[in-house]
Length: 626
Image 1 (cartoon, helix red, strand yellow):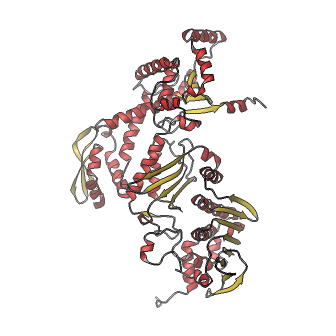
Image 2 (tube, helix red, strand yellow):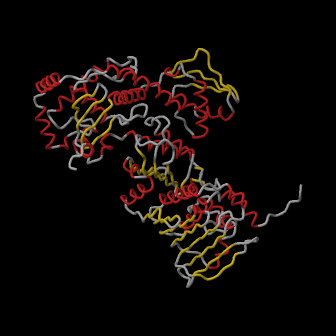
């Protein structure tokens, strides 16, 4: 082995560039973060050939002093931290002082800057074996321009790993989008090969911010998103932004943006908390969409854990996880059909939210009578076996003849003589109509057709009732004490010492959930009691998974998930089946229950339970007014 020697500055910077500069998108990220740290409120980005040939970033920030320009291209030179205490509470996006040095070691870089106090701007360039910087005066307004040409020109091996121009620009475009979402007070412009891709103005108001989110994430996201803004006074945490409705799920996690103090991050604690919040309403294999911002004391988060600063470490990870989960879980649970339908929430609608009686005197007896009849008749079917979905289509009743339809209409009019008057009253005062409206018919024993103020609502009666029964069973289970069953032969588990320590630390948590654990050695625990509902399950695997979660995230929801799966299966079997004929009062009672039930927009499996067709949608369908 050869003697130990110092690496040359250029080779040391190229080694550092291997961690910081992966592709053109990495360069744009580092330069844009410097622009934002400099206080710029306008940034122009111009790239050619996906950024491989040219990347130019111009901002109107505070600029760099003439004497500091050569130092800005040196390793570990920064103006953002000075002592160790500054590193423990970093408030800027950049702080290491190695980005520009790494970039200049694998490209031809020029840096032009001018401060407000300077008469002229100065430009510094680096190129050559020893990376000596050359300075010369230049014409430039207040601010800074960084120009990077021929990326990886002197490291051909790295250049071969670059993808096509389209792929590299897609990654670069994503970086610009993320930073544009992180700073609404900054205007961004992106040009590629002379073509303007993004022209984003400053967004100060709520409406302008939503418009920027719509430009970046798509108008469909903002149309199907809920606004969240929650502050935890005790811990000093604030969560705000937008979360997509469960029905607006994605096949991949491509629309998930999470920012901590303005920094885009990917963190397993955050991802786990959000996934747990959506666990009960998402269709399996789907991913939620969100743009969320977490604000907390910088001293409570460590951003110096990854070379690219994409990952962070929370000093109180369990506190953050619990805050995110509870906030989003409650927001999704409190969502009602009236929140998704839009429109004004009148006093009458608020009455329905609180379980009050309808305003109309004609509808009041129908509502009460329907609720009682629906509850009594559907309760008989609780516990019946699930009918095959593939079989009930063949058992559809034959369409009625015109004579039968006329007889039905005549009979319905005789039973409800005030219905015509009621419909006229609703036309005059649509604000009295509840959000889900009133049932008008049942389609093939599967769907309920209801009329509300906006138009037509189609409800999957089995899916809707399944969610209602499921939520009631969960509530009953939570209010009742979890019953435990002693094991005839205690189950002995061989675990690691950390897992055994964890079982002792969270013994009260396990006991509350119906488990009794005892430590019998350094790496052995014994399960003496299990919940009655999980007695026939794989208890050993469940305990191991729960301990693993608690070691990583500080808590686990696996036991609740297993219990909820059992309750969901029971609710599915107990819900009203397809091809079951319901009366008008029964259908109305189901609609009222949907308005007052948590997560009623999705069934237990994440499928939607209802869909709205507005009058404008119907007019377009039939080309009315065209």
